[in-house]
Amino acid sequence: MIRVAPRPGSVVTVYHISPAPKDEVISRGLLPEKARGKLKAVWVVDRDMITWAIAHTALHHNVTIGALSCYECHINEALLRRTRWPGVYYVQIPVPVKWLCTAREIVDEVEAEIRR
Image (cartoon, rainbow, N blue to C red; front, side, top):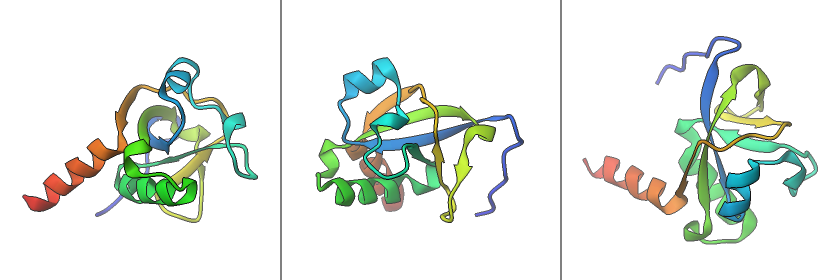
């Protein structure tokens, strides 16, 4: 797959996987200060990396996939910081949530696509 880099200043759709309480995230957005790691940032991935992010988050937080939520966010591309992993980014400002589903729904969707 060829990736086309978004134009600077354009809004991109990214996803955040978290075991965080849904009501708090929906009302306040994704907050960097809630991060548990050394870097106080919101970690996000592009569409191609969602399944990796689900597995990584489940292992890292020692929870089942059913306990995870997937938050869709629209972020100005200029605010995203790239990492050494393609498709994985972080942002150090609060991020509003545009859409929410369970990680299980994403996994089921991917499995259905594979079966086709």
